[in-house]
Length: 219
Ligand SMILES: C[S@@+](CC[C@H](N)C(=O)[O-])C[C@H]1O[C@@H](n2cnc3c(N)ncnc32)[C@H](O)[C@@H]1O
Image (cartoon, rainbow, N blue to C red; front, top):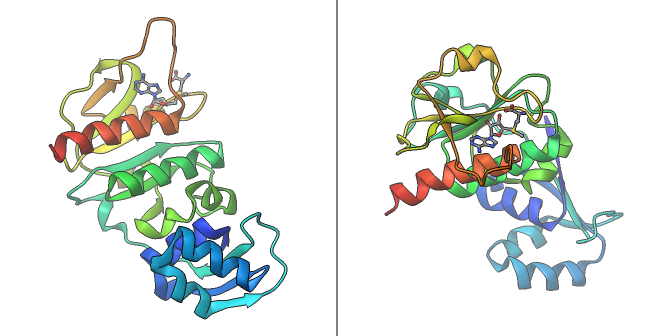
């Protein structure tokens, strides 16, 4: 399956994390692309310029590309050494993309979602800036995921230490975490908020929880 990479940042991340999967790069102007990549991402400049072909590019960075979708690594659903981020039925592709981006940054073992949204939808890939290539990205059913299941909910108990092999479950924009995952939860945990604020955006909640784990794990 072909994945569209929109913009320099998406191409850059694909080239950094899965160079063997990138099969084409288009640039609007070769010397402008050379200047931009040498300034912003010199580590992948040679690889990008070796593939670059001049053509029509609508992205403002003047760079786009295509890559092959990586083979699925579903082993993270049952065994892992860093948390797995699981979104329960997210609706907004931008939120899912932002969550993948923070999962990659915090070094989560993987990202998964349940529900209708395709995690490889072009709008989700745009939202992650190509960081789909940095970790396993999976569509799952609630039953497939095992391990300490920590459901995030504004009405839960105080967040404590997050185990390295946790599954951090974040709910949808409207409905929160559904019963299929909530009834299997080992704990329901909250991120503290100022009185009067009802909830965080789901990608923000994912970021706060993943960094609570990461800052503690790397102390
Ligand atoms: C926009 S919120 C959903 C709000 C929804 N109306 C509800 O009742 O849960 C999206 C998800 O972000 C997470 N979340 C948001 N704020 C949180 C908080 N303060 N503590 C823990 N999780 C939170 C939860 O997983 C929630 O399901």
